[in-house]
Length: 77
Image (cartoon, rainbow, N blue to C red; front, side, top):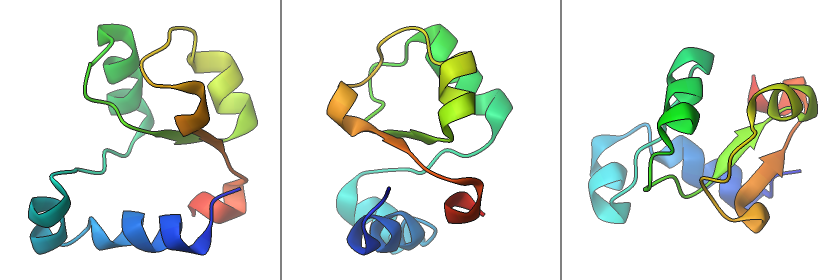
């Protein structure tokens, strides 16, 4: 489950000024995320997904286990 502060932070990344401020970018979409996982992109800080999606798609370690968040469908919509 994500904290309210994490949710606020992720939502703030929709605006360019916060992406520049934090030097972070939020990547969304199954196809893009799968590509990053397959490519083992080194700059992935956190991974968020439903338990089933992570179980089916996340096989390699591209970020620390404490930076993987399991959320419900309701939380990510």
